[in-house]
Image (cartoon, rainbow, N blue to C red; front, side, top):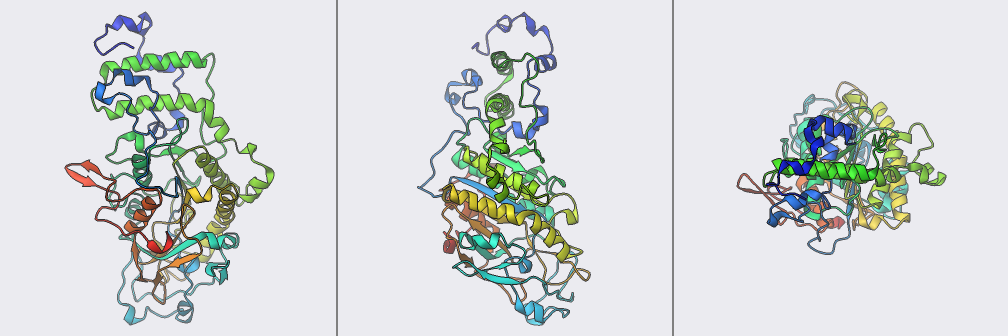
Length: 490
């Protein structure tokens, strides 16, 4: 391949055409695959390496890297319940809340201020019933009859707390460790630390709810100040997550390969050292080229048996959509994708778990959509021998208040809420921590979001203090000031 100083005539006389015409005629029409997704490519075999300075050649930022120690988890599936599910309706039963229904918060619990409630707001008892499930006896709400059968595989942390009562900052914190946008997401840190096990699929995939995007938007899966190859790849909602995987017209694979090589020669005329944007864009074209061969098979759920599809609820209208995404997550992880994040709930207000007006209607609907698919995912991973190496996380950006908003709803509450983890070396059948008698504040073994992140990294064989990135003269890390691994569940 020519160097930067090679004469332009080596590119051939056809290059009198414009760059736009070249891309259009050369088969690079992957715009509908979402630019953000294409920037997450694997440049392992990109011909651009030949034009890099010697010290940068053959360095693939997404090449597989060894963990710091032999860890159980190799991949992550984060089931993100956007909007904030209520702890007292899901995994944290509070009999006292029932007794105090219609009364203000007991004075001994102190003052509290959220967006729309205070300690003077009246308490709202839950209509849900709980039962001890599995041999471990974990208490699970009747919202989750299917998940209840997996109780011995999950570890519930009832004492998670965060710093913001507002959706966007809380989403940023749960996804990036900070309440401000602009920092690398959890998936980006995982890729930075471990690289990818797949050269033919994106390493970090994000699947949004078809009801709409989440409030925080792209910074929730962005790479922040990392090189752009580490950001998440958006798959489309619906039965066709990736468009334009078939080459149009007479654009054969040899011709596309020639086009890519020629495009790299053009890029190399303008690329300067450490040009991460141009390099990431070139890598995106390489990934698009390889995905034409490999992605159609990966996203083809018809290859799954009828019984497997039924396990995920794909045969029922209520669970079909989320079930498809959960099954696709398993297929992606099975093929080497490192980090998959599924959002349950999207768009404004009641289209997510954001139950301001009617907690019963909202949570019955949202749990009804997700319970069977989530249980199916755990069961399917387990029977395939994949649960031990796949860390599954369930939870939202915060919980909800025990006080009522209006007469039937609950406001946001970051003071104490529940999340659970399964697989990836997590000790199933475990419950850690507690909130107070009404489910307001985490009081026993409280764990900040930083602790959750530290635990996730630990299960992947990454040390939060060693996994750093120098930005603006500071050694940045996911957990910022540091978290504590939740030892009871690992």
